[in-house]
Structures are given as structure tokens and as C-alpha cells.
Image 1 (spheres, helix red, strand yellow):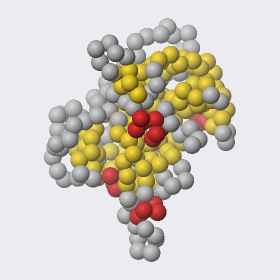
Image 2 (cartoon, rainbow, N blue to C red; image 1 turned 30 degrees about the horizontal axis):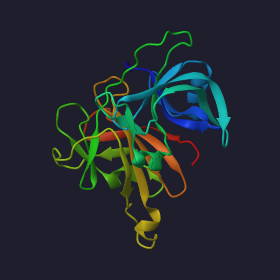
Image 3 (cartoon, one colour; image 1 turned 180 degrees about the vertical axis):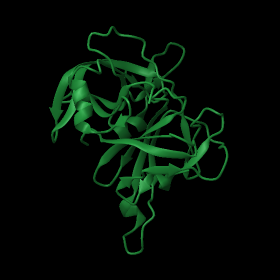
Length: 262
């Protein structure tokens, strides 16, 4: 498998005892891996010298330089370092007016955002890291997104992203409809999913899952967009990446990682 090699993470400005940190979630080398020890080891070796951090508008909000690894919470390893830029929960105000806060993002993510770090060597000079970003939107009860850049959006029903009430689905299939009328955006916050329940398993309200779209981008450079989602289950928040390996009508779970403790 060829293409870009990188680590996908979540950057929180106060993630490591009040200091900036990136939670490394999954990694792509010859293939994708969400093994937490392997991903943390790559960071500890210095193989991810820097991350770009995206704002809610899909533009780069800032850059994170990795200095080392720190332990937080229950044996979770994060990249510690320095961050220069605006909060991930901001968007470009236009006309050289800087960036403005997005309160929905702050409430949903506690001020954190998507961080992408190409794999390299610690002594590699800083380069102009860029990823091709895109967008998605809500069309009725589905996420609409143009996966393969053909200007036609596929619609993925919200309930299809869940496997029962506690896990993300391994595959997420599009509905048999073409196109959508909504306007794509890089991020979406506080989308509610009521999972399908068997009789006698309680009410849907008891098992409501929150979904935040943290970004849409071509992560691996294959010309197809991946979706980075945060799923807020009743007891845990997990971050997942979905991508198409064959048909744009079917997304596969590329990886899943635990977010910063909430």
C-alpha cells in the first residue's frame, strides 16, 4: 500500500496538565493501525516531529511541535510539546480579521481539534504540511459527503455508524439515493443518534449517542476522503476514522482510539 504516512490525533491546548498535547489515535505506514502502544512508540521515537491542527473551517489553526511523550490518566500516552496558533475551535473571520471562536465546538470538544502529523525523522526541517480538506453535512437523518471527488454526495444513515448501542460499525453503507441539498462543512457538532433497540432493552433516549464530525480530509493521499468522527457513548468518548477502500458507497472502519479523558 502506497500513499502518505501519518499519525491522526486530537490536540487539546490543555491536554497535559494544562499544557498543549496531542492524543495519538492511529497511524498509517504500510497499512493503518490503531494499536495504542505502536502509535505511542512512533511518537516516542521522534517519528512525528510536528502536527498541523485544524480549525472548524478546515483551515490550519496552528502547528504543534513534538518534544516528547507524557503519561496522563490511566496509562494513556500523549505527545507533549509546544503549540503556536489559534484554538482549534475557531474559524477564519475573513478580511484579515483573525479567527473567531465557535462555541458549539468548545462545548462539544472542550476546545480540542483534529491534528495530523506526517511521519518523518526528528531532524527533518519543518515543511509546508498540507492535507486536502473537504466537508460533509446533514441531509435528513444521514451524513452526506462526496467521498471520491465526483461532485456527487453519498448519504450515510446516522444509525448505520453504530453496531448496537456501544460500538462503531465495522462497515457503514450508503443509502440508495444520489446527491444531497445540504451545504458541506468541515465540522459538525452535537448530532444525536438514537440507536435501534431490541424490545425490552430500554428507551432510545437512554442510549442516545452523540456524534461530532471532527473533519473530512484525504488523509492518505489516495484521492478519497476520510471522515474523522467522535462518538460520545453514555460512558465513553471514542474517535473513529472511516474511509472507502473499494466503493465510495461503503465506508470501512479504519481505526478507533480513546480520546482525552472527559
